[in-house]
Amino acid sequence: QVQLVESGGGLVQAGDSLRLSCEDSGGTFSRYVMGWFRQGPGKEREFVAAINSWSGTSYTDSVKGRFTISRDNAKNTVYLQMNSLKPEDTAVYYCAARLRLAISTAQSEYNYWGQGTQVTVSS
Image (tube, rainbow, N blue to C red; front, side):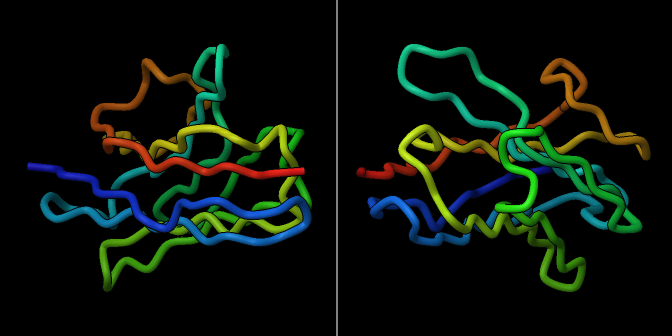
């Protein structure tokens, strides 16, 4: 059974960096597409980044060049390195797993979700 637990959120200033982690405590992690989504205050949850089993990646335009998704299959962990953070990056960040080989940006295509971790960026 896939169980995803995020960590690494916090309160930072604009321009700072954070690294989010998401560990899968069950399942065959290396075969999943792993994604990060976020939901800002008063907003819909949106796609941020995803990585497939051979480390192909996809990013939403607003984070390209600032965020990097990576995975360590030996540790069953996916990371989201966030640099040059902006106040508009403030959100609850969710990790998700998709039991398919192809990356998807659609929330409905993901089978398992973590509980979320809060990221707050002050100006």
